[in-house]
Image (cartoon, rainbow, N blue to C red):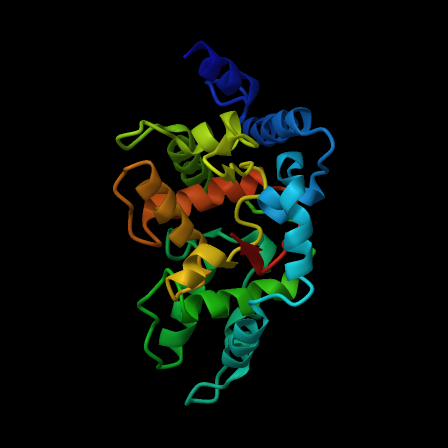
Length: 281
């Protein structure tokens, strides 16, 4: 318990009297500084590679680099690009829908008109409905992941810069921060238990990834999922998997809790470039 409190204090996640925006900036600095000290050889930009960037994973990185010479996700990504470019029955396109939307490095964003936090997946379905098409029901994998990848890859290299200046966006941020650090499930784990306190440590044969960089490569093509026949996954699919692994009840994709968590992680990733899609084991 003492160790947890020390880490929370170091990361600026215990109560402070700082102004709201200054407090968020302090959160970002403390979160990123923690990982800079834990993994001094890893640059901020390198965290876009996920667990592959960590020194504890160096013995397996060479295999990943060889795999990336002919990425297994390329054929599917081509399909995603074609879906993105295909006009709807009314002649509209996804490109037209998204021309007035934020770039991918600024998702999720708070929309005052709907008083809601909006994700890429939600804007994809909003575009479909606005053009008389059926929305996508499966928000974990498949078509939604391919379309999201086709959109997000257009902004690869752009650094994360999510806007949390609106007071309601701050509320979403605080909800996401609470979810990240709160313990749940039969194992009584939080997101931070594995990805902050134990980042770089081994769990059976796996190396636990660092919380810094989470989300910038999603949607991902995952080897484990490919064995099951659905290799692609949205970020919320991964959240559900994490809940299951801690023996907690997974939530529905695009639930308020997962959207808030996505915002919190996106804010913590400020300055890290998008690298979509990524391949993970």
